[in-house]
Length: 116
Ligand code: 5GP
Image (tube, rainbow, N blue to C red; front, side, top):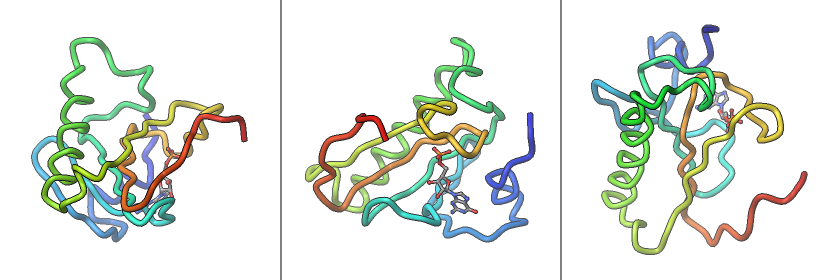
């Protein structure tokens, strides 16, 4: 498992705009936001990609999603809407190999999933 920029953020070796943290995960604003709201939810357990999460650890993914929903409710955009995305490997454009959930919101996001 490589040491990634997100591990450095977790260890407070690299600064980030942290919006939430608990014993399971950390959430911070993306450095290059793709929407008015763009927050990354990162588990404290190490998995390079979604492919590496065993069935018995499904709760790790669930916690990322429910933390994102709680954040959306707390910030008042749960009803207007948001998108959560997890990129896996090359074709999805994954660049940081510690799993993370993107939360995108704050504007009508349009369609997605077309080839680049
Ligand atoms: P991926 O493409 O792997 O799904 O998403 C990685 C995300 O991490 C990108 O949206 C990128 O902008 C963000 N990112 C990369 N380096 C940093 C950093 O040092 N700080 C923060 N806050 N976000 C980063």
